[in-house]
Image (cartoon, rainbow, N blue to C red; front, side, top):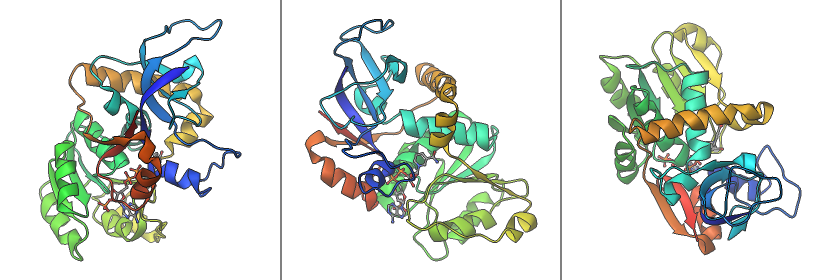
Length: 294
Ligand SMILES: NC(=O)c1ccc[n+]([C@@H]2O[C@H](COP(=O)([O-])OP(=O)(O)OC[C@H]3O[C@@H](n4cnc5c(N)ncnc54)[C@H](OP(=O)(O)O)[C@@H]3O)[C@@H](O)[C@H]2O)c1
């Protein structure tokens, strides 16, 4: 049993409470899956944890609460380098970023990556992880304040994709380097121009559809651009292989400890504002990873 200090909110939580996500939990359902806090009590036969210990973890549900009960295997001891708010929003988005960029996309140091929705929770984590992998990162976002947040997360440059001709601004940024990878948690009308901007051998990572529209792209484009479209489903991959996350988290926490990875700033609000927080999340009004705190 963990006393929850803070819990991370993702776009998926907003979909889940409406029954619109691909995984539909049985009712009654208590939202919230990632959290940081302190161990309150330890069950019989559990070793490796003790009351008062700082932890971060994943629950199948119920983390938007004062306390959450989880299996010990779902917890990680929390290093002193990570504060509760950052840790609460770390697990899902950073694991997704490392799994997507490294394991699915094979991002190499020195390559140029375009991150769409770069000020969102998923996008800002991808910016931070790609910088830890020594990539050059171009952030794309719809407002000045969001582009500033993406730059604060570590992006090298930012482009405004709310402009009709945003691909021209992108072209100017990739004139010297080309574009080797796109990380797309937004979908909709942004996906095709981003894919068309890839250099030969480029990889387009399909991560999510926060715009609400799943893009339909002609496969001839992959032939003409000599590029690959790669699906990134961290949730599905970790359900299929529960051993996936241990090594991902070990690497990420090591990178935090040795200063290679600087997690992006988060936005915090009180736990009792959960309804408004979910609604802001779904309408794209939040900046950075949203975290609810007790
Ligand atoms: N593949 C995986 O393993 C995985 C894991 C976790 C999450 N996801 C998915 O990743 C996506 C992003 O999640 P998130 O938690 O990062 O969400 P988020 O924090 O709300 O960020 C999403 C971003 O999408 C952009 N956006 C464009 N149109 C939007 C609209 N109509 N409504 C809301 N946002 C809109 C917004 O940026 P601008 O205003 O700059 O356009 C926003 O910052 C979701 O589809 C989620 O399901 C996938």
